[in-house]
Image (spheres, rainbow, N blue to C red):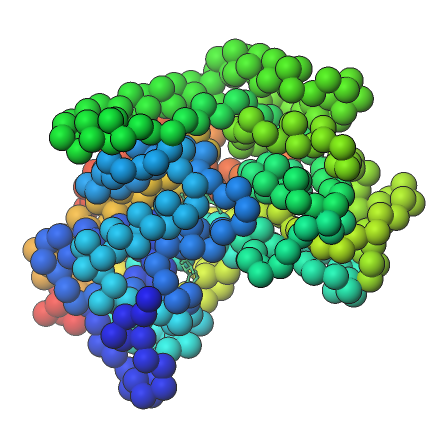
Length: 502
Ligand SMILES: Cc1cc2nc3c(=O)[nH]c(=O)nc-3n(C[C@H](O)[C@H](O)[C@H](O)COP(=O)(O)OP(=O)(O)OC[C@H]3O[C@@H](n4cnc5c(N)ncnc54)[C@H](O)[C@@H]3O)c2cc1C
């Protein structure tokens, strides 16, 4: 569905003036727009490169795509959905929820689809963001980047990949029209997407080779259908669904004790995972190959009941030798084995520590976010950056979580940004900018709390850490502490320039 603004050519030459420009229409962009709408603000635009809302849940339509957090928790607090069909929803239901929520809060009319932001520059004289998109130019007082941390697929640098004569698909760019029936399929990667894809395509594929670099820790998925009776109960007694949400939140939060405070508390989780593997994989050699050698939690803990049975199935091979090269009709591993292949599925993740949008946003002194972050990402509360006035980041550095719902973190940040915007209005500020000192203090706080966490000390390499080995992606503490930090704007850490001085 397209908005009335989704007309490419005619408006492309003129510059549209707008109060708040939001990049992206996933959970974060929609959440921000809805917060503004709910307090009567309509001078906003959502710039979305795709042709619908949804972000992650629009793009990751691979077979088996589903959420790893229960829907009662993985949804907006202000928009509960009593009709979730399962405790853990699948991609189509979450995408439908986001579409319905965008409609309910009348956000679509602010969306410009097909508008990829190619550059955004702060004009210090005009005190505006100059934004170039593939659907025209915009000039905004405030820029909110909600471009996603897991939005840009990473394609591995495998020699010969470009010469492959069959089909290559990234998990986040699935070709629905491609039929895998009877094909010889290679799945590269064994992360969160792969453990969902492998069981979903295994019955159809003629043969399946799963190329594993590091085995993940996997625990059982306690998924179940939600009965119509429970759905009715949720509708009649909304407090009940809120209570379930609160309980889920607390149970999951307990994991932080093990992940970030004292790794001994992860031992019971490790035992559950080991027993799961033991139960589901009978072949001792395969079991050994599937047993991780790092502390559980160091990489994202995955949940699945059908991955182990799928890799144990006839016609499926778990390949642990690294890939040396791809030839037009095969994949060759470093041990010299060549496996004829029709389709390669790249479940190889996303650009996380090197966000593409960071190369497109230029601050006051002419440097991009990527330039100033070249030695590591630094922000105030994952949301603002010194030298980048009136810019707010949603799901910025150190806002990620692996143990609970990202929507909780997104809502925390949206409240913070909304308070910043209300502060600007109340004080008549044209410009609001965080101080380098506040940014440095926050960087130290994150570094201090990251010390001793399983992500740094768990003995694995993961996308949570940047090339310097620093944690720049995850929030290293209880999420309620992040919420407390972002409850309202820390005004003392900002310099404001009044409109009159503009
Ligand atoms: C397969 C998968 C499974 C996941 N499962 C879970 C889970 O179980 N639990 C959990 O908490 N989280 C999960 N996540 C994380 C998930 O990304 C977040 O929960 C959440 O959806 C992020 O929302 P977002 O709005 O920040 O980003 P996104 O949903 O990624 O939205 C970003 C939007 O910005 C747009 N965009 C990007 N760059 C530009 C540009 N230059 N110009 C214009 N538009 C642009 C994109 O097209 C996209 O629509 C999962 C992620 C993936 C990929």
